[in-house]
Each structure stands twice: as C-alpha cells, then as structure tokens.
Image 1 (cartoon, rainbow, N blue to C red):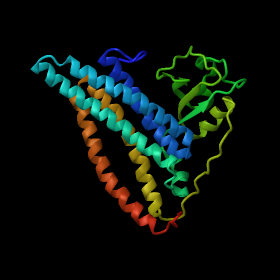
Image 2 (tube, rainbow, N blue to C red; image 1 turned 135 degrees about the vertical axis):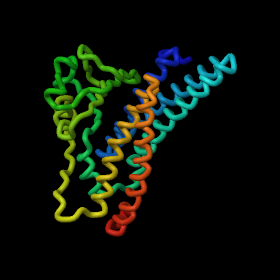
Image 3 (cartoon, rainbow, N blue to C red; image 1 turned 120 degrees about the vertical axis):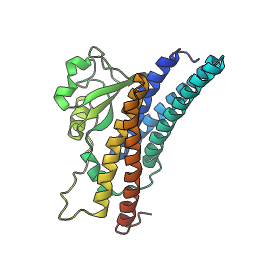
Image 4 (cartoon, one colour; image 1 turned 90 degrees about the vertical axis):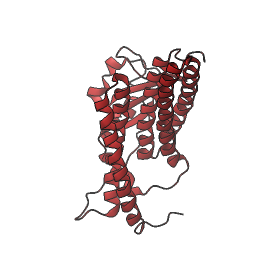
Length: 273
C-alpha cells in the first residue's frame, strides 16, 4: 500500500466516505459559483479516491482465502464499486463548469435556494484567519459556515478539530448558508465575489423555475441518500437501507420530471453557441 494511506479496510472505507461526500458537496458548489477552482478541488479528490479504491480492491482480493471469505469480499467489492460511482458522478458535475457547457443564468440565480452551500477559500497571509485556531475564529457563530475539511498542500484533514491552527496557504472547506460565504472570504483575505440575487417570480412559475426547484430538491435528497447509505453500511441497518432505496425511486421519478421541464424551458432560452 502507498505511504501515508490507511492500512486496514475499515479506515480506508471511512476515508473513502469522507472523500466522496466532500466531492459531492464541492461539485454542487462548483456549479453554483461557476468556479473552476472548486472544480479542480473535486478533481484532486478524485485522484485520492481512485488510489483508495485501488487499495481497497487489492486488500479485498488478498483477504479472500476461502469460499466464505470470497462471499464477504464480494460484498466489499460491490461497496467499493458504488463508492467509485459516487466519485465519478461528482466529477461529471464538476466537469460541466470546466468544459463551459453553458448553464442558464436563471438557473444559477436560483440555486442559492438550496438548504446549504459548500465552498472553499484559501487562507491569505496576514488575514484574520491566518494563525488562528478554528475555536478562536468561531466561524459557525461569526458567519454561519462550519468547517468540514482543510487541505494543506496535498494533506487532507476531513475532521478538523477546534484546536487546529489555520495557516496561510491552507484551503478551508466550509458548508452553511449562502449568505455566509462572503464573510468567510473576507476573513480569509480572499476577494469577495458577488453572486446575482434571484428576482422574485411574477405570477405562475416558468418551466425553468420548475426545473430548478426539482434540481435543488434532487441535490438535497442525493446528499441525504449518500449519508444514509454509509450509515446503513456502518450499522448494518436494513431500515436505513430501505430508506435509501425509497429515495432512489423518488430520484428516478424526479429525473423524468426534470427532463420534461428542461425540454420545455429550452424553447425560451437562446442558443448561447
């Protein structure tokens, strides 16, 4: 196994869980902010996840020494494959921004209605956050945003502690209300990027507004499903597993409705090409 990586399957699964969940969060953030920088963070995480997936597959194969072991490892290999799919899906979302496929401005204006927004910010030298602990900065109180990870060069911390010190060059990943993003960026010494505020719809919802509503609900449901799936695996809870299946069925139905409203909305959006 590679140096600095977990050496047992349980720790590998835990790190893969943290990595894939952060990838999903950041992929949505990249879309919301139309940010190639955030997309690049997703791609960094994908490289990390690919190494974990390879190591987990290798360990599962080496651990199978009998027919009974093979049955258990087959289940592990299925989990590993599904984790890889989560990462690939997040990567595909992030690529939308990098490839400049074109996202309707109205859609980006309405995405802030999602319950929470993940974001990333680099700590600048001499800023309010440079040299301060997370406890001292008290970002949750000051901005409403909570730290979910810190990257120092190529080292990741998916479980930042209150006593952890932020240094210039660190990249801080946060999650919380969209209005807290500007405050966090200001405290980190980063440029504050304005985001267009959505206008109040007049009268009946348009096709695009209906599509955005479904997309936001799918975003929230997908994040819940990922968390429940990992909990079902960790606690071997059939009840949680059934909830995930129910969410999947609902997501399938929502996807059909989303496609319908997008096609209807396309009639009113000029071709940007």
